[in-house]
Structures are given as C-alpha cells and as structure tokens.
Image (cartoon, rainbow, N blue to C red; front, side):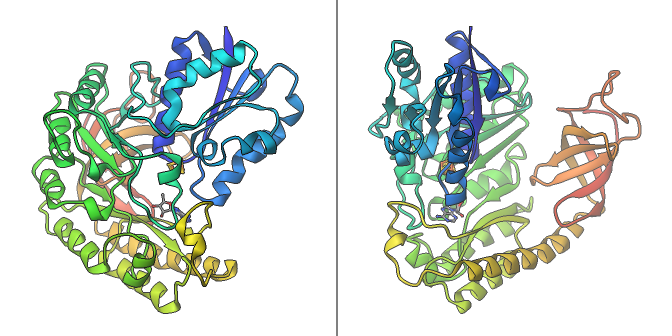
Length: 445
Ligand code: 5AD
Ligand code: SF4
C-alpha cells in the first residue's frame, strides 16, 4: 500500500478539489497518512491568490528538500502549479509532479508515469471541456458537503490570477449536480454548499439550459436537504431571481457573499469589475427588502494601484451603507501576468497596512451593532461541535453566524448526548463582534 500526505491551501474550491483527489487516490489503492514524514507521496494543493499564499508552498518544499533521495515523491497541485508550471522544477528540484486543477482527470495517469520511472511529469493544459467529476470523493465533514457546479472564470478582474490558474468557465449539467445532491442526501448529508468561482454565470450545458436560480431551487427541493449555500458570486451576474428564490424557500440559507472589492466606482473601473457602486447597491437593496432578511458579506481589497484617500473613504462609506455582517479584507498584492501590473501609482506597503487596519476597525463597530440586533431572537442552529474549554456547543445559523450555546439537557458530547449535526432552536442572549451566544430551547430536532 502506497502512503500519501496532502496539505491544502486556499479557498473552498481547493478544499473540495483535495477531497476529490483523496477519493481518487484511495480508489487506486493508496492510503492517506497524517504527516509528510510517513508518506511516500507528498502533495501540496496550492493557492496563488496573493503573494503570501504562494510563498507558503515554497517554504514547505524547502523544509523537505533534504528528504529528496529518500524515496519520497513531491507533487505540487492547484493554482501555483498552473501559474508557475515547469519553473517549479527549477525552484524546487526535488518536485516530480506539477498539475493544475483543470488536469486532475489525468492525475492517476501522471502518477503511473512516475512509478514507471519518469522523473518529471506535468498536467498543465487548460484546454479542457471537462469538469473534475468523480464518484470517489472523500468528504471530511459528515453533515455539510460541497458540490462543484461550475469551474473556471471568464471574467478578467485586473488583480486576479484565477482566470489563468483555473481556466475558462465550464458548467456541469444540472442532472449531474442533482444526482450528486440526491446521493448525498441518501447518505445523511443535510447541508449542501454549491461551489464555483462565479456560480452566478452557471449555464446548464444540457438541453434544459437552466440558469443558477433555477438550479438553486431544484437543489433546495431534494428531499432530506435542509440547508443550501453557495459561493462565490460576481455582482455583475447576480440577478434578482436568486434573491427571490432565497426569499421563497427557507432551505436556501439567507446569506449571500457578494464581493465588492471597492466602494469607489473609479477604482472598480480600473479593476475591470464591470459594475458601478450604484449598480452594486441596487443588488444590496434587493436583499435588504426581502422578508427573511439576508445576511450580506463581502471581500475588500485596499491599496489597489491609484486608490486615493477619497477612494478609500468611499469604501468606508460603502461599509456604512451596506452594514455587512462580516467581511474579508486584503492588501492588494501584485500577481504575475495580471493586467494591474501595468497600472501606475502602486501604493506603498505601509499605506496599504494603515488602510487595512483602519478598515477592519471600522467594520468591527458595524458588526458589534449588527450582531447586537440579534439578541432575543430564536435562530435555527446547526450544531457543528463542542468547545470543552467553555462547555458550549458550537452552532451555525442560516445567516452563517457562529452561535455558541448551552443546552439544558445535553451538556457534553458522548453518552448519547452528541448533538453534532442536529438542528436546534437557540435563543440569542449575547452578541460579540464575531459571534453570538445563546441557550438552546428544546431537545434535538
Ligand atoms: N491582491 C489582494 N487580494 C486579492 N484577491 C484576489 N486577488 C487579489 C490580489 N491580487 C481577493 C479578492 C477576492 C478574494 C478571494 O481575494 O478580494 O474576492
Ligand atoms: Fe487560491 Fe483562487 Fe486558486 Fe482558490 S482559485 S486556490 S483562492 S488562487
């Protein structure tokens, strides 16, 4: 039995790709181990969204350089593999396999080539019609499962490597998505997260021709599925029908992640984001006027080339206007091959750091205010774990908030008390900037 170790960096697409890679390797007779030391095959599934993420894999490879010759095979998968290609062999000569996500269908063949004595093999073609569908997916979470609905990205945001690392958009047929959802429901999964770099541009390649809203409604109707989430959305392709679908069907979680990147239309133009601040705000208004109250989260980049103090203030005022429930914020990072490299007026690193800290502090107050509005409400909560230090259960609401709670009967996991995977009504009693706390109302549901 050949032993392999895999470490995953980056987004949920990468996490799910690793689940598929693991499933494929297990079906080929490999065994997964927890440390690189114990493995013959060491794989890194990498991210190159920002420079820091890319550096991580080279640090890891450096650590194991001296193990070269001890019979280990090193492989680099994912976005750094696609971006750097054969240059990885120069920077890390002990690597034998370099394979991007659009070539995972060939991964087993590439490993056979290595077994047959090839020193260096690559899978770097982006010319694939296929998505990486595999019945052998090994899923880590017993309650929440990911399903890829679309791979790749056809947008060309000026800062972003993804169109180069994940190739052009390829949608899966709705039938294959639904079949996977039904199979997951049959094996006990209750929450499904639909994945894609831009799920909103989903187009069913089969005769049905469904768009994303239609697909969402159909997945929500699969018996046994209690929650459906999706990520990630591009505002340009985010249509009102998606909001209507969420408002109509409680199985569709009332949370939308809608990355805005900047609150300044001038910056959005230079980023080639294809929408203005006003157009973005219209989408926010659709969500704010729903009956269910949709939680809204976003991504922000500070210090994009040419971002003036006034542009930055426009982003702060957008945070006030939207009142996001949460956000991810990043300093702009130069990425190889991207259009933004050619722009003038790159912002000094210290200034980017200042803006990032200021923005995060600004948002903290918004979240304290937003979260405190939840005190007194009863939220349906899916139990994800137990914190032994605080003796609280850890749950998640449909709005994607973490809700830590006590239970009058079930005070710890074990002895038949395990609530993990259950859905419970929990009354919110306290709110912090990043989570809520409360008390469960009744027995497991
Ligand atoms: N620099 C900083 N942040 C970036 N992102 C994407 N590319 C870059 C970059 N070059 C951020 C965007 C995106 C999130 C996944 O990562 O905000 O939405
Ligand atoms: Fe990182 Fe983007 Fe690749 Fe995901 S798609 S792993 S975020 S570079």
